[in-house]
Image (cartoon, rainbow, N blue to C red; front, top):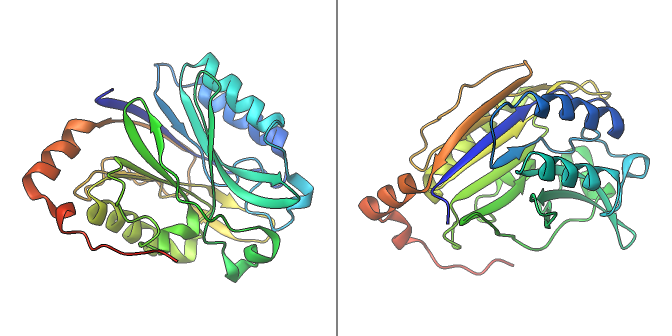
Length: 259
C-alpha cells in the first residue's frame, strides 16, 4: 500500500481525428515530466477529440494507442489513463483505459452517452461501474457526461479517487467546476477532472479548467483556462483517513439499487 500518489494531469488541445499526431503531442508533454510519477491522466478521446464518427478513428484493444500507453507506462514506470474510441465485438465504445507499468490493462466504458450530441447513436453505453486497484488506492474512472449523474458515482465502494476525463465545452464550464467539487464533497474522495482546450471541427470551444479537489472539496490545483497546462500534485491517503474518521459522513449513506 502506498500513502502518496504523485499525479500529473495534462490539459491539452486535441488534433481532430488524428490519433498518431495526438500520441506524438502527448509523448512530448510526458517527456517534459522530469521526476517520477505514479499516475498520468489524459483527457477524454485523447487520440481524436469528441468525434461522432467512430468508424474513422476506432482502434482495437491491441491497437497502436494501447501499445503506446503500455510503452509510456513502462518507460516512465507509471500508470497512464484517458479515454479513446474502441471497437469491441462490432460495437464502438468511448472507453476509459488504465495501463500500468507492467502492461496490465483495465477499462471502463462510458455509461452516460451524451444524447445532446448524438453520442448514443454512435456509441454503445457501458453497464458496469469499475473500481481499479492501484498501489493500494481504489480508483473509480468516469467520463465527461457521467459527471452529471451522482448516483452512478456514489461512493458505496469506499474508493479513494474519482477520475473524470472530458471534452466539456465552454458554455457549461460553471457546471463542470461546481459538479467536480460536489462529487468530491459528497463522496469524501479526491476528485480529478481533466478537460481539453481548443476548438474542434464542430466549432465547439473547450476551456480546460482541469482540477483536483480533496475530500473536503478544496481545490488543490490551479484552475487554468484556455491554455495547455500540466500540473503535478501529490495525493495523500492520510488526508482521506483523517477526514473520514473525524466526520464519518459516509457512514450515513443511503442504500439503493441501481437499475
